[in-house]
Length: 400
Picture 1 (tube, rainbow, N blue to C red):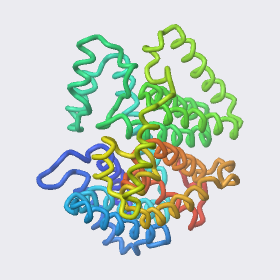
Picture 2: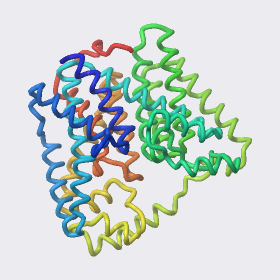
Picture 3: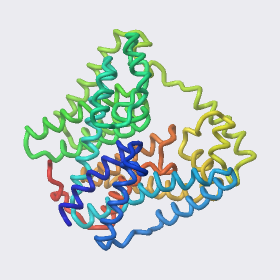
Picture 4: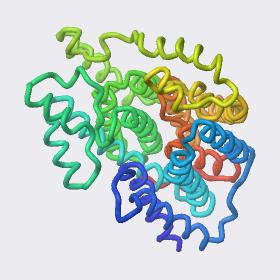
């Protein structure tokens, strides 16, 4: 079962990330692989972890059910419960088993880095005007296309794709930004632990591609967090080689784009975002009358958009009482992630903590978060849970 579990774990994670909208019969590939993984976990005789975080999350889901009931959206609630929350909790438990039982965190890191690398290449191609080619690649792999008509229209009009957020291998730019920033941070761990110059250069090249993919994605906060955390890692590890490459990338990129007009600079031309400010002001008015039970559908109808904020999403999905439990989860997780001693240790856990911190910060201005049950949060939290509750040896991480 050792080898079967580790390899199927990779299949499950990649399928859940990239094939959530691809169906085989009545089930999506995400749901099918989740069901198989759940059966494997049962065969492994796993004792499912119900710590304080999970208990609070289940209470949050109960209040989300009440909110959906008041809105008359119970059917949609149960659909999301199966398609997102159940999948994420299975991934959470599977990640704990992968690390705690099999000591195989390399399968998790390699899977996420490979997804990020693949999406980075597609994002860069879209950025330089090969959107049609990237769609052909996604068609061959049977991955759901993102904004197909949009990419064809832009390419045919010869308009610069630098003016748009790009989706890479995903159905929208937001998850692309999340995964590129996360995979870029995880790619730094093999660089720090490489035992030869060849391996260090190889993994550094992977990081460079993901770094530029993140830039081309045009998700500004995601790229800014990746740039800041990468700088922290290079300084903390006294990586002179990485430090030089980092500044060549930044200043070389600046020299390249400084010759362009603001429109060519795309979304980086301005960090002002009045639309979010308008959402937050409108949210204040909405919750004056809907604080108790929330109502995500009513919120969208009232404002025309989703909350674009982790805390507002929590209020909208579950109301005041559910949000209390979600706030507790966030506080505990942030306390864990901001363990300075661990962050400075350059252990595998430190990179996982940094990765989780970055995607959580991203959720402060986007809708993808632990509230909505996105799998990446529970994968990473499962890894954190495993490492903070078992003794581990960093040497067990093999560079692959």
